[in-house]
Length: 295
Image (tube, rainbow, N blue to C red; front, side):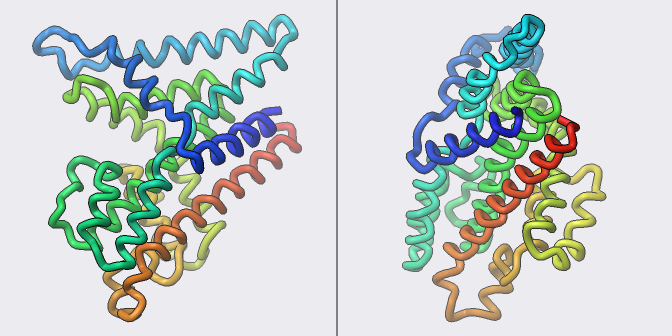
């Protein structure tokens, strides 16, 4: 049943993303508002944030356990679908990327930057950045967002159930939205720990869903590097798995200067296709695990 729950939630969430509807960010922001006031000198503390995330995760896991004990486990499945739909998703990305690619095609890089600046990390929003740097920053942010809001949740949901899925999604929200900014880097470190296994599994999936020979030449160092950040593993793996220099704008402009106007759209389309094929691989793998009785 776990396959059916996730598949239904995934399909509904993809539809909602296309409609730019139902984002969990505002709910997390309101929930974390309880941690907006702290004593002076304790701004970097993380305990209160962890408690705020652990409580709903524990309650969800406890509710499912109680229902299972009393033989009502099936009653939890609709609730799990609802929670997964709400936690997953990247609403708003399509509405940013489409005008970005149109501006890129027109050669208006300033307009392209304005369309996607809010999607970039604060440290990478420099308006004076070159088109190549801007595009790589956007590609990195897109892959990281999809990983954290789909693949990461899927992995830990299969491993530990809905409670663990809520916990890891909450940690990501803490790193992005906790009102005490000095504490966010500490939450980000926690995210890197929970990302370590699933991002490397996704890296391998990139090789299966993309150019395996290219992946073998590039991504092994990303997987082997214990301290490599999540975004680094994703970029290295995707670059090796994609053909046509989709994540190498400098090389593309040298080899295909006449097609530079189409690079932005082609590159992002290639990245999205790779992510979609990778999710299909994960769903097929989950189906095999269900058939084998592992989950």
